[in-house]
Image (cartoon, rainbow, N blue to C red; front, side, top):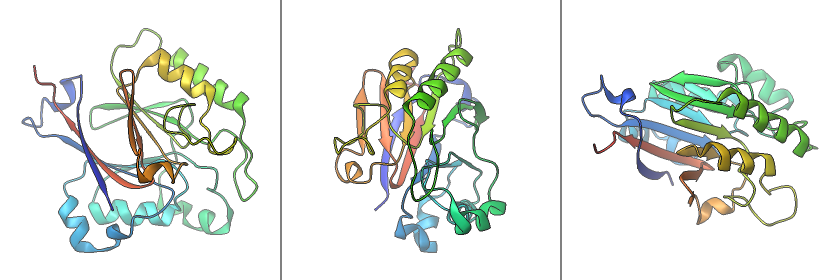
Length: 224
């Protein structure tokens, strides 16, 4: 099932040439939503302005979704994004967002935080690398007021993660970053069981969305 959510975006700038129309994101992660395989379902979702991948989907799957909806694609790597099948489909996708860098798409500032550690069947997670990502992005955003969307594979600690031991827990460095920058929107995957109920949570001024499967996010212009 594809979830839907509408959020008011605090910056009017991206909407100036859209006649008040919402900016529509399709966010995907971890498992292909089977409804996206049907042309009629994809047509019902259109128009989509941007496909956002939060990790652990093969490039061939991401490219199929992006081509099927005729929308550009941005994504970060997840912990399982490796191996022969992943490498074979890499030519179908653009380069992933480099960790801690910021892209500008559809008038939005989008920061990426890829999996901080080794990827593969025996993926290892690194709190140290997650802290390095967080500190680097915080330095880039110093003094910036334009609202930010953060894309990561793993959520911040205690915000959309799962208390099942270390593997599906969020990163403390990400939690520090979220508390410091207060981005209006944080998109992530990695915690599929949490997506069955608490797929959207509010922490302070940040809405966190677990994109396992697929979520349509409509960003609405500010009311005033």
